[in-house]
Image (cartoon, rainbow, N blue to C red; front, side, top):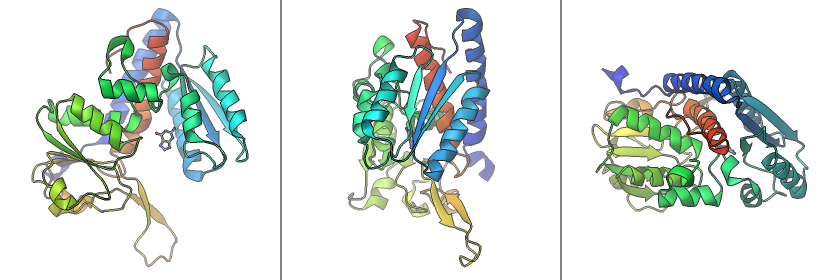
Length: 303
Ligand code: GUN
């Protein structure tokens, strides 16, 4: 029954993208609205280049407009802020994503602050962070960061109600750990946010019915950290050398969880690759569709 333990993020993301594609076509047919996503890349970070390419392709495949802006590594902050302002004022652009990390001469916070919160499909602007923490709904509903949103969709799909469950989030980043904790609180979990300074982390993790690992350390979470039957969400994307003595120079992607060993204990687990990763871009498309609907005064579809 090991197969049944795997939460197939790749298949889930494909299904979500199909629903988004259908709703995008309906939006065009019924309201003559085509959602547009602008992605801004500064510099030549190879991982960022891959992400941005994938985002552009999947945006177009969903029937949305994709606007790509590639700026040289020496771009100044004022120049980037001027582009953000232009995109804020462009009615064809419903969502804006500035790929992080940014080069050192640019303040990430200054750029995030400059994005129109209604177009902030990353959910990083303080207005969206605040709305998430205060539980805003309707016109005050936040745009939710894509990775935790994807984790939440898979958790609810697998478990149904999360009410009363103990959730432990390992990692306290603004992109994953903190928003993940807020989403779990909203679902009436009892939430612990653990991190590198947490005392006896394995014991804390063992209390979790839901364990979310977002630390960026390959295979850190061992089988004996996991409560039998727990649902484990592995957000880690770590590139490590393949085990051939380093001869080939080849690398592979592994998560924060020792997946093979964890499978024997966990009730369900997301693999790496093929778990959380594919959901993130699908959720970016979901946020773009949601943002476009709100900007046009249309009720966003349930996805
Ligand atoms: N870099 C890595 N992940 C992300 C993300 O979710 N959004 C942005 N803007 N940059 C990233």
